[in-house]
Image (cartoon, rainbow, N blue to C red; front, side, top):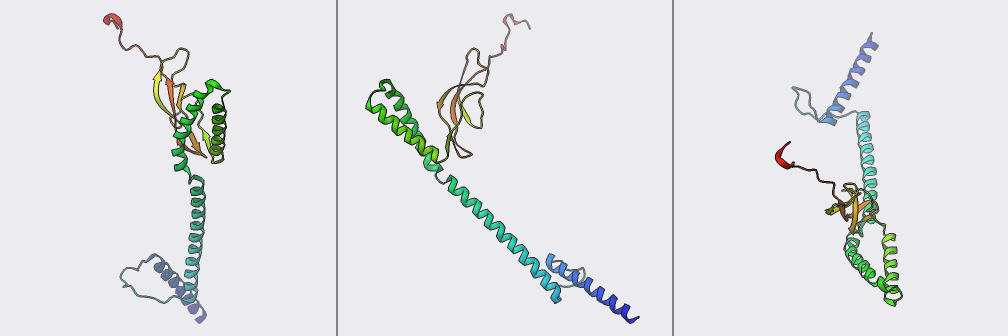
Length: 195
């Protein structure tokens, strides 16, 4: 009979130790009891510190992954500001090249064409892509600066590109400024007042 009583006491001690560990971890104190620091059993304390070590290792691993991802992204988009400031220069150079196209045999045109090619190669090597500006207007990539009516063209169709748009890898750097087709205006008033 003594064995059963001893086994019952051991089981009750284990249950009480488990409740103490849970209370320590959650900060809960059983009702009616003052906060008393109860020494943990060596097994309970080892379990507690093992869980703390596992959580800390997981937090550290997540931190390292996040830092590596942020560093990679920072390196990928680090030059965005500089390139964004160079785009108007590139646009003006392209307009100058269009004017020089009138005399394609001149050395000025040939030199400008070579420089434009080098600039395009540089932009491509930096991950810059031109935003396609054909077809239907997309507010995610295009900026409508004007609307015009044109026969045979559906409403929202891009008619003309005023300024090219560019993307840096998968981010929009500058939206393309476009002129879009206006839909046929519905007649809002009827002649003679009859409806």
